[in-house]
Image (cartoon, rainbow, N blue to C red; front, top):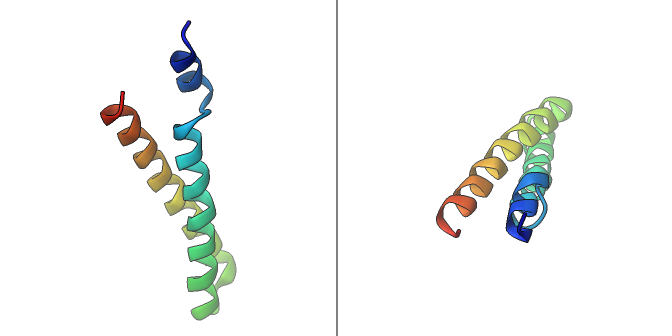
Length: 67
């Protein structure tokens, strides 16, 4: 198994970075929006979920176009 296959199997490298950054920035965005609308817990939940989805989409596109 090549190093690239190993990275794809355990989400290390660029794919893992995209998902991690999506979670971090999504949670931060959710905290800001939640604080503005006085619903912090809801903002964190929605923000991190949205960030996770966007991180997976970016990771998938990186894997698809930059192979």
